[in-house]
Image (cartoon, rainbow, N blue to C red):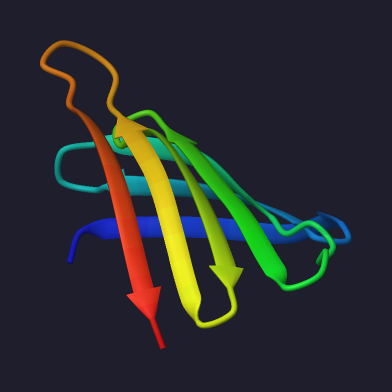
Length: 97
């Protein structure tokens, strides 16, 4: 309650989606504007890849690379925030099916 959000997503070219987001907290007038993308290049053989990224005034910058090889899904990414006391993190995820 007290939050308003709007977003818009479009396909810019085959394999590239871009999205914008605006959030407003009505009680504190705190706002956040963000832009994100997802790029899926055309498949080459048995490997499928996806690159995702976002930039936001409050949440910071994040980039993630996903790849599927046979029965494994591997993701690696990093995130950093802006300003004083900013956090940085790096992650690696492996899923087997």
